[in-house]
Length: 188
Image 1 (tube, rainbow, N blue to C red):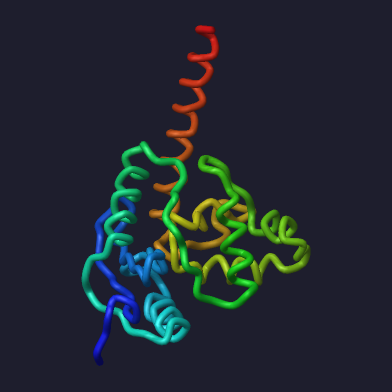
Image 2: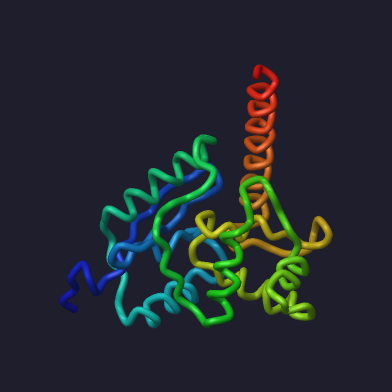
C-alpha cells in the first residue's frame, strides 16, 4: 500500500514509569496514546484504522515527538495539562464522554456515576464506563481520574497498578503545588 504522511497513522513506542505506551499521530493530531499491552489493544487499533480508513506504520512525527516530550514532563511532575491537539475516533457518545474527561483537573477524581450525572445520563453509569474504557488516548484524556464507587470497582486498560501510580503521582504533585502556593501567598 502506498502511504503518505496524510493517509497513515504514524506510531512509535515509548516506555513510561506506568508502562509502555504506543503513541500515534494522524496528520497534525494525536489519535493514539494507549498501553502497549493493555486489554483490547487490537480492538482499539482496528477502530482507529477503520475510522480513518488507513493503516499504521512505525515512525516518528512532530506530533508523536511532542507527545513524548509532554509525557516525560508529566511523569517528571513538570506538566499538569496538555496542549497537544487530539483526534477522537469513536461514536458520538464516546466523543462526548472523552471530551468531558478533559474537564477533570489534575489531582482530582470522580466516580463513573458522577461522570454520568455531569453528562445528564443519570442512569447510564455503565454506558459512560464503557465509553471511558474505549478511550484510545490515555493520560492526555485522563480516564484514570474516573474511579469506581469502591476501591475494587472499575478497571483500567493499562491495569490497576498503572492507574494507581498515575493517581498517586498526581495527588502528590497536586499537594506539592498547593503547599508552594500557600507558602508564596504567606510571603505577600
